[in-house]
Image 1 (tube, rainbow, N blue to C red):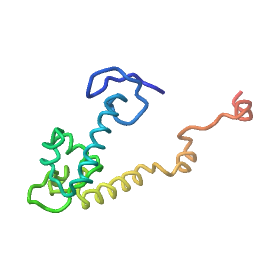
Image 2: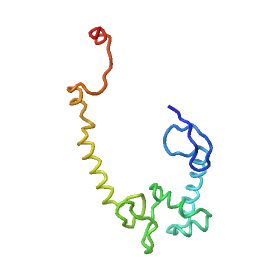
Image 3: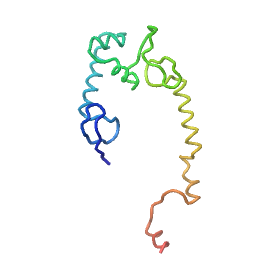
Length: 143
């Protein structure tokens, strides 16, 4: 179902059908900025975040967002981490979490789904819990 939402960037109303909470125009603008960064990095491999920012006039926070989204990666090590793991604080080169925390989060999610028995619908069916499709035969039995 389509919902109306306000764009987190420009505030305009748009039809939200999933994904990010920004309107198509702002999404196009973001993509154009990313493509400009991508082109610059092809022409200037190994450029720093601050170089890209000053050369293209794009804010460092916006570049960091592309790093956090996993669309860019920092190569080499200049001693200044641009990103830190949001869970443990280790320096990282892309994304939001380091490899160890990513692995641990995945394990924790798997354990949680097993604990909640999310994938085992047969147990719930045996207990009379859940949903079912009402056939004409079932409707007749209920009467």
